[in-house]
Length: 529
Image (tube, rainbow, N blue to C red; front, side, top):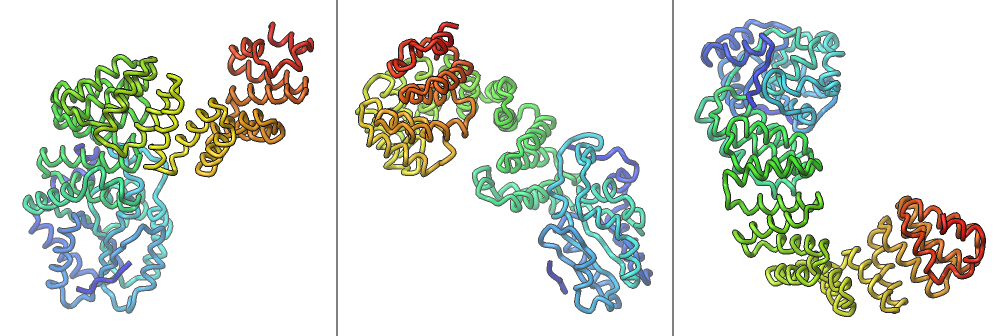
């Protein structure tokens, strides 16, 4: 708080339509505002709709034209829940005649829900922002405690809508509403400034509060009726990118839909719509959206690449490879596409081709730890264990805290019988990510091989606690219990493993660790069921 001395968003309410679309010109509005402020002798509530740049200009003009009035500005820099205590803290508050209040929209931005047509999603929320609940409940107190004060709330249009729909008791006391749309030149300049202020990667680096500031700056512009369509389209896309960076993918999707509503051939909006749908796990719809983007811009390599990711997530690996190939034909140095192409090939059992794809990725980006790790997995599957370890070591030299590479390295070392080294690798993975269930199971298996059965059981139990449906942990725990000769516990644990993965019944008939309990009727009954 500081004291300063110096979609089409139309609504279906007649009140807001009159405010937004049938107002007199700006000069008439200003003269009416000035008359109201000059004549007012005591308490009053006035609402002014104006973008921030316009509001600053307006307040300066009022100061100049009403020198006989003591005018102050309460500038709210942070969201608030209560307004009255802040007014009470103002210096010389009993001498103030007119108090302009700016920035209250910061307390409403968390509740923005974009939508186009009618009332949109703003007004379907059940939650009332705390500041509006406070004003609804304290309107009498505001009048009684500050009978000499005329409060002038200066708001962007979206915030005025909140007052109308979410603070009706307070808003009903209004002495007037004055609408000051930004003129065309200011509107265009403000739009350009907002659009130049950042991109998706920059939005990722912002805090949640900073992203909300950007959201409300964009929304204030979108609510301007005279905003040109081309700027409206760009701003909807921009707002969607900010919501996406904030992981509010449903809200981002609504914004991208808005952009497409105004410009159906907007390939960037179709592309980002696909990304939002994919983040929401609506992969089929995402693919359709990418197809729209590619239909408009066939050389759009980002859309081909993300289309491949969505296809791969659906298990459609061959189609995914084809999509990656399209992306790479357009942009051969797209290292992420080479890596994900390798993943799809590996899933199809085409390990040698996968390794070649990973090598392409690494050739383009030698510090690409994901590709080094995936390459290690493919090498391990081909039985090339020492090469796999070397590949994991490359990944870890680049990113020492890559816990899954430590886990994968431990698996390969275990297969080579290098148990102490494997144990150390699993321990590194666990130290980096204690809730990662895989290394706990791997650690338990190594400890079992070393004859440290009680420690092994503790590790298996930890893996199961982290992932209760982890069949492999139950199975290996059963093996360990069998080695201890604990028949009842072996059968019970193996039963749990088989319930999660029925083919463990066949493994139980072959695993040498079950020799101590194999002759028991309970065990025979279980594996022959």
